[in-house]
Length: 119
Image (tube, rainbow, N blue to C red; front, side, top):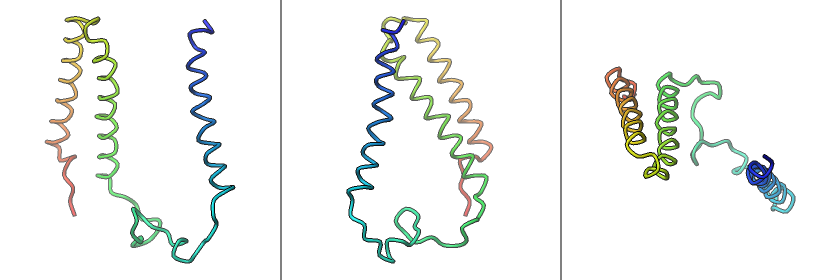
């Protein structure tokens, strides 16, 4: 049992240790020159406008949720594609049904106006 999970444990350990070491090294060894221009808060490279506690539109959150749903689709399609020949017709039918459900979801969201941004 340990031989099955050992590679995953090693990968997770490395995935945690490497970013921690690199971040710590960057903070410890990096140049510290905090100019007033560098200390200004920014969004995507430009100065912020408005208050800090502005509530975002529901459309923003709806778009984020839809992105996650359709991003997960790609996560499920990769292993299916990797094992396509082994799964045979059953796997093909299951993936067609999966994509059909996602297309129905997309059409529903589109008709409800969830994909429209209003200014």
